[in-house]
Length: 236
Ligand code: ADP
Ligand code: MG
Image (cartoon, rainbow, N blue to C red; front, top):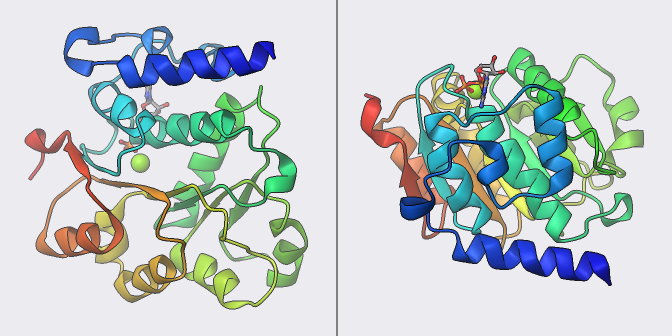
């Protein structure tokens, strides 16, 4: 009952949040849960970067987002916080299966995202998993059906989607395409198209990139609906 009220209050704060007038400088000023805030502050994340300040409120409101900001600007938290908050507000539990999928171009980047997620998500009961190849597909399969937030490289994620069992995307709430420009540079266009074609169209999608190009616009058109662009001014 008390949680009901808390969640309703959070929902109202999000809808009423106006980035222009709010202009939050700190994570504690955002309409996010106290458990995420606690994880952030324990990891010493206090002040928002520009891309975080611009994109997180828009993502929290449920829009698709095309986020562009140079390397090192803090794009990881810009998508991990909305994922944690979405699943929290949906009261996602370990039995609800896959709620969010994050696609990253390389194993190293995927591992970094996973580490940040385990740090800031320490006060949630959600489970996170990494599929990056190198490990036996069978080994991954045993765990994958119980994972709520999955992070992986394009080839490996498609490999799991192509297997009839294990990865069930029917409930997927959020898709993140991270470092999308690099994914395209590395030749993952067809793989991304195939993954996106496999996912339920009702999901929210966040696409992050450090650069803009025609092929990136194509990917945005294919993967995003009614999206808002943020942070595009200071990149090429
Ligand atoms: P990008 O994906 O844009 O290249 P990252 O998300 O990898 O950037 O973040 C770059 C660095 O900045 C990381 O070391 C991260 O811990 C740090 N960082 C991100 N957001 C914040 C923040 N709000 N406050 C302090 N450090 C941050
Ligand atoms: Mg990044």
